[in-house]
Image 1 (tube, protein in one colour):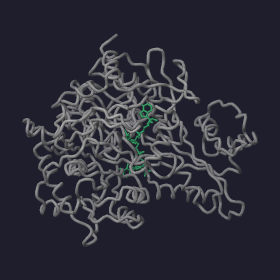
Image 2: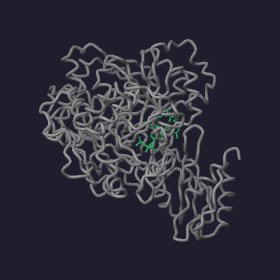
Image 3: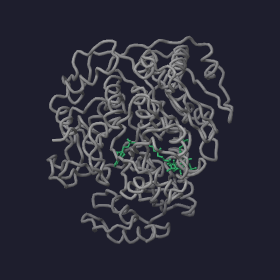
Image 4: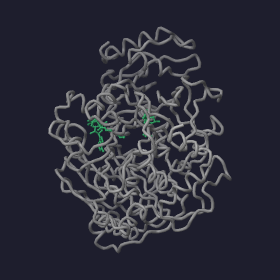
Length: 632
Ligand code: COA
Ligand code: AMP
């Protein structure tokens, strides 16, 4: 057995001493009564009885240990032509003062705060300030529309919302305040206050009494100390797509999260304190929570907050510029970013002249990494390119090639082996483990390792229904795939209605709900079809009501706009087609999988249960009118 096998064996055979030893790296205000409380499965609780503060562990303790002058954050914003460094000392001061401002607005331990901000360092300051107070933050991605924000306001019931006057996308400025105001208007719950950071590009109109200016609130505030919370108290809620339009509020506790993320920086990413780590994602996603903000700071690294894109800000050399300029050791992004760079610069001409000698590894996640993109990245960068698999639910890797423990040979298409603490099994529909190499539902034996979601925010039944009941004793990941003879995991597809568009997790069910609300649409289906840049793109199929008076093209245009207005531009829903009927099974289930195969030009078997096979010919013809299959 190699070293990696030893570590995994130890983590599974004696999880309490494995994670208990690792937990010594964290500053606790009170030690745990038990490392793992298994009294109420499947609600396992790590470090029950312990108390700590997440912000102290991410910031204050590093200042106390002499890192005060090291940059904690490098803010690099090509869209505003800004580079700004914030030391650990400055981050501590800013976070303590903003925590004071939040407290002044009435926020105390356990209250929720929604953060609706673009990639500016103040987003991280706001998150850490919540953690400092023991308040629960919920960051909402800027690409979501007002309606999605309203849904989250009603679910999280925030006392305060923190936002900015605008976000900046390549080539356009997006005023956030009108979206925020519309969301609050549309929500039943109303926050007491909004704290708005004005940016020079747009001045937000303020509502007197409710809205507070960030600078004024901070100027009037006293620095607030760190508040001790239970390890099992919630640190944040992060909403992610589920099967329906109602997003799932993934909860995350303080204790296990700090332990596992601090450990992962060395064990998985092989990064040391003091080094520069860059996750090119967004604070609105789980990757941003874990690897832009918390993990690098727990570990005493410098993290990069990049407000730009891999291409177009200004060119496909943007990533190489940032890596060189800031001495980045390890980059973490989604494969789609590399597909975007490769499409515009296939020979990597923009790499020339950049000194990447300090750059050690590229980690990819968020969607399946196609072997072509993997090998292009390896050839171009000449460093290990590591695919790893994880989910909002888990907050860190389920399967990874742990460079800091023992690098394993790379198998293209696989995120390598289960990370320490994960006992993965591929199960068939009857719940039995399948043979190596056989596809089934990828499940993790309970208890899950520390850091994973203890429940869904105020939705315990949904937690049990969505994840725990189908395979008793296991967490159903929602991903299908296989594990080969060498123990390598291959994640192939979702088992539900979730699609992955440019590394963003989206629900086709939620899009169908929007389309179905159009008065002329009698029935609809949305399916994800393959896209060479974004991995998948949603395509809609509409059956119009028999008395529809509108031209099909007009309805298509309207539903495209409706999805943009109600879910947001991030849904990238731009294509729909009108069909006479939808293919269904005799019991009425829409055959979305078959539609997808036709759109992707894959061969498919005529489903035995299909109601009327002629419908598939109609679907093929309708797809041809909108250019699918591509190149076919
Ligand atoms: N605020 C407002 N709008 C946003 C937004 C934000 N934070 N993020 C994206 N959008 C908009 C985009 O402007 C775009 O609008 P458009 O339809 O008017 O063009 C739309 O949402 C779709 O955005 P995106 O999917 O990002 O596509 P893109 O064409 O702008 O860029 C990539 C494509 C591949 C370059 C980009 O998706 C990317 O860099 N991905 C990196 C992967 C990543 O960050 N994944 C997160 C998980 S690790
Ligand atoms: P999210 O919760 O947004 O992080 O999305 C999680 C989903 O993205 C997973 O359930 C997978 O379907 C997919 N995913 C993430 N990483 C990978 C990966 N490395 N390989 C394959 N699929 C992945």
